[in-house]
Length: 211
Length: 207
Image (cartoon, rainbow over all chains, first blue to last red; front, side, top):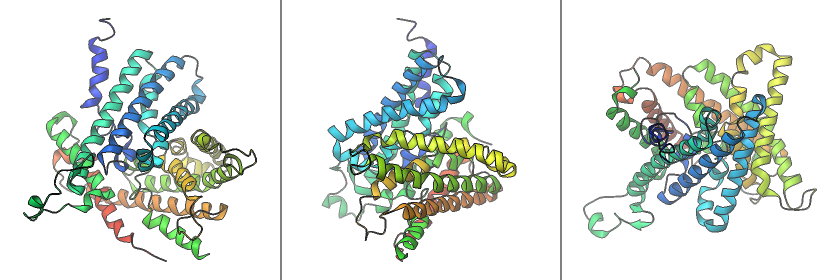
């Protein structure tokens, strides 16, 4: 039991939260991170879906790693991921139809999300299933964290709401002259907020700064 | 004809792959350090889009849809089949280019495997799948192989414009004094954000 949660495994799980974050440090999976963050709810669902898919794809590829011929490994990885994504997409359509309409093509695009291919290539092809599972879970949660931070600011400042509940849309606030900034809901602000998140993170971790 | 022209212009400027949908961001950020390689990747993406999208269009309408040759609605299989078609075509293109044009292979070759997992290729196929069912008078509707081809070409050129523009800005930015924590990735994101803001002014464009 103690072996399952050794120091190394803890690092594998917790590093993606900060110093090895998939979005801000490894620069993987940017496309969907930006596109689904206009509201908090789809961002949370997307984060969860990616976490589940990365964790299980990592386990499956790690189990198969000794039997996959090196030349066709990309196709094998793509097929495993595509099958998992199809399952998640059908589940979303059945149980959370509204969110799946909002996410539109971005659920399908989890297949080509670089986090998946990146982690499969860099980790699951060399490591045992349990470590790969932790790595997938850690990276998925690290990705979800960035999505939630970006979506929180965009929904709060853009629509004055959190998860659809009014926070800033009251007369007493409107009377002070405050107005919601509709630009926050537009695509450009997603990029600029991620830029600011990277700024804050690198200002706190000196060793990450580029010269 | 007017419809095709309008679809073409819209897919370059209004529905730009990078600035409106953030597709293909990973390679966009990684390969935009100088204009020459950016141009190479842009041409390769356009090329692969133009080849794969009509194939996926025929697959969707003739095989997977309810009135295709199999007679059942198999569109839940579309993710697996689209990605298999894309990966297969990219592999094939790589071999053909290597055999017939070594000089083109030398400039595009390294990018071709990357493109199989570029979201803009898969994304264009998925958008095409959504747009097939739109009414024909809608400017975004894709009604045949011709308009699928035009959509692919427009999206590819839009992507090419975006990456060459960013590469040119980054080349100049190498000489400017950026705050240390913002250097590299951070300032690139903010630059792309400002470029996207500039592209927003096309959003009312009508032809």
